Image (tube, rainbow over all chains, first blue to last red; front, side, top):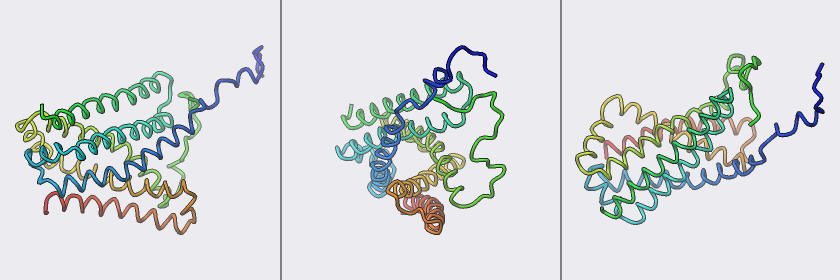
Length: 128
Length: 131
């Protein structure tokens, strides 16, 4: 027996979806399509185009296509990774504080990795 | 952000403790697990680019660390996770297009993604260390 003065409709409001599910779904798949091209390209290009030594990898990364492709792979991958981990957190991390902290960390970590990786690729490409 | 609350004692889907394991279920769980594992992969990739940007000495130190037995084992796991997640991701995109839902087809493609993960990782390591 519920003794609240609030109507059932009033209590239910605001607890439904945040209305961003479709955007999340489409972004996850759009990034997946680009990654299905970028990741095999990156792996094969590095493995076949370099011998893994500092000089050969530096030479590879100074080529505009390779620098741009690596930057796109990092950005697209981290974006996709954040979306995926967000769903895992929402499914398994219970409790308001733990969930909020996890979701904030899941935004901060990809952002930090993206900035560090892009600056590094840019530094190699420009040759500073 | 509606979801399970901390004081809710009801079992969570997918009820791992009561379900008989089958390949379509396993591939779904592996997809999530490999995605989480690739979080580490993204950190390794970023560290590699930072080492490259930090000069020859830093790059040599990083690569010798990466080539230690334990790191090689982890790297093989990350590579297998990437190959599997890629193959099963394409399977998911086919599903999104409405194709491949037939139980026999989805079971066959499920086994194929597991094989692709293992074979892909072996091929990448063969290209890296034998070629």
